[in-house]
Each structure stands twice: as C-alpha cells, then as structure tokens.
Length: 213
View (tube, rainbow, N blue to C red):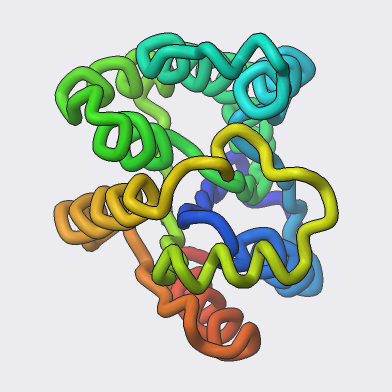
C-alpha cells in the first residue's frame, strides 16, 4: 500500500545480542500483511558503497589499527550515502523503511563508549543525515552480559572487530542509549529485551501502530 508520498522511517538500536534482527523480520511481516511496502536496510551498509565500508570497519585486517576518529567518519560516510541513495527515495515513494541502526549508534558507540564526545559526533551526524530523522526509534534495552551470552550460544563465525570489545565498552554504549532515550522520549520506544521474543514483538507493534495511518 503506497502511503501517497509520505513514508515511515523506523530505526532499531541496541547493543549486541538484543534480538534486533529477529524483531525487524517480525515487524516486516506484520507491516507487509497490512499491505505496506517495506524496505529493510542496515548500517553501516545499505548501499554497495556502504557495504564496502561495513567490511572495512568490521572485518578487514587493516581495520584493526583504526583510530576512533577514522571509525566515526567511516560510519558517517556510509550513512550519508545510505540517506541519499536508499532512504530518501524509498520514503518519497511512500514506503516503510526499517534500518538496523542509524545515527544513534554512532552517538552511543563512538560518542560515548569511544569517548570522542557527544558534541563532535552530533555535528558529524547532522552533516551526514542532511536533516533526515527517524519517525520512530526502537531501542531494545538489554544488559550487555545477557546479550553476549546469547551471541556465544548461537554464533558460529569468529567475532568481528566491534564484538571483540570489553564488557565495559558495551556498558558505556548502553548508558549512551539510555541518555538518548531520556532526552528524546517522543522519538524513542524503549523495549525491555529481557522479555520473551513474543512480548518484545507485541511491545514494538503497539508502538509502531501509532505511526500508521
């Protein structure tokens, strides 16, 4: 169902192992059943250029020596391309765009946990997104210790560069998300990730329905 030029932009945020991927797929199914056209994407990535950056940031051997300033700028570069090449055109067509991470990840991971600074990251984000804010940001909140237990129980391939950080890093990420959610309660939907997948799904759906025509 085309939304007559007014799309809906939903982002998902959270630390590792929160179940974002599962919940995004469940939300896509519910929206599709309503007749919505859903575009799924992710960051870093979402475009051919963005996927190259994703590999560089997460998996490439040369990325092991990456300094935090380089990291934040690469995320921003991927995001700028993502916004112009995929998100904005999809929204103009009236689609529902769901992105696994967006600029809040950069604020929490690089601004807070990497200690680059909120003001610096805010300025970089503002330039990269060109004014495009999500209508709704779903933050699945979960203690990092629980998230990593989940990852270790199901993950077959070696951890990527971001997943090799210490637990203190991810505790700082969670604190960063909490600050963001508190500062923008109108945009953030905070969901307890310790609940069953079905309870998380219901909480997300109840929040999303408010944004549908």
